[in-house]
Every structure is written in C-alpha cells, then in structure tokens.
Amino acid sequence: MSIDEYLAGLAGPLREIGEKLTPIIADALPGATGAIWHGHPVWSLGDRPGQRPVCFFKAYRAYVTFGLWRGQEIADPSGRLAPAARAMATVQLRDVADLDPALFAGWLGAAAALEEA
Image (tube, rainbow, N blue to C red; front, side):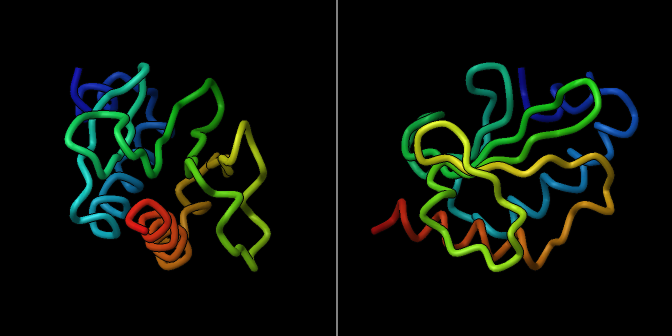
C-alpha cells in the first residue's frame, strides 16, 4: 500500500487532514522517504522504511494523530505536543484548522536534526 492509497481509504475530514499534512512533511523533510510502515505513513531518513524514523501519522475514527519519534526531545513552546510512548510526542488533529504549517515545519526540522546528529 502507498501513502496515496492510505489517504484514499480515509473518510472525508480525515483524508483532508492527511492530504494537507503530507506536503508539509515532504517540504520539511526533503531527504526523507515516506512509506507505509506498521499500517500507517512513516517518514524516515534511512534507506528503508522505519530506519531512522522521524514522524508518522495515523488516522482513527475522529482524528489523525501526528507523531514525532523523538518528540519529547524537542522544545515546544506551543505546548501542543503531548508525551507518548518511549521518546515520542504526538498531537491530535481533528480538523485542517489544527494544522499550523510553520509550527509543524519547525518540529520536523528539529526532529530531523536529532536523527542526523
């Protein structure tokens, strides 16, 4: 399955969030590879999916979770990133208005820098 196929299978509002989020990720992580890994889109800096992962998103019934693998190591003055498993941090997106391209690009740049160090 491709990321486009994953998006096509989502309900309207969730698909819209994913379609707006995907180019934000692609622009912020030009060297990353996006692929379906463990059933949802993941962007990684390694040669194969899941190798040096940076971020992911996963659709649920009423929202999309956007997550950063090492998100707890990133400064987040917005307070929107919530700690998750291991070193991850996530944010729930219920509407496209929840997307802030500049904020997300900053998070993604910081997350990529952690993986590149």
